[in-house]
Image (cartoon, rainbow, N blue to C red):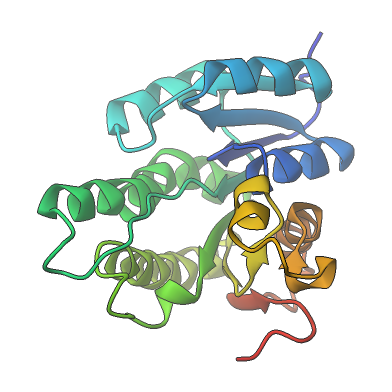
Length: 232
């Protein structure tokens, strides 16, 4: 049975790597966790594994679906927007519909999540919205034309939220992950890389949890994580 006395953390994009690790970290930190993703089988397995968690199948690009989730789970104290829509290709090769879809997942979902959850945080005088990003939020490489514009817009939206909500007691932070995340498909793509080339999902989750719990006199907005030898 879920312990409703615990505060609620809502995590989008709960895949087998970073999202699942974030859910585990907040559960270990004393939260109930609402996990959003589209894979119902994965959610069911994580729900069985993680204490005080609920898995909800949700397309975060659908604002009505997000509203239904909040109606179901209640007001979260922490929101982690980890869902990501990505694509590789130059502007001539990426379909316009792909760029639009990625914008809905990466940027518009953050917009709708903030509208749905921030008012209750402001009323409570506390809360946090943490967004996971990557270096595409800071630069537009040729082959990232269907992705980087949406992450850059996401970062700027998060900054607007931070400037608005910070003085009202709600912390908004953007975490840039400048690394290859240690998940099976990355290992398959780069089989000759040593273990310390990758960043572990658990390390990312620890930093997300840290950002959500920074003391009020020392809030970060833009944070970055990378392996010690990553060039930047």
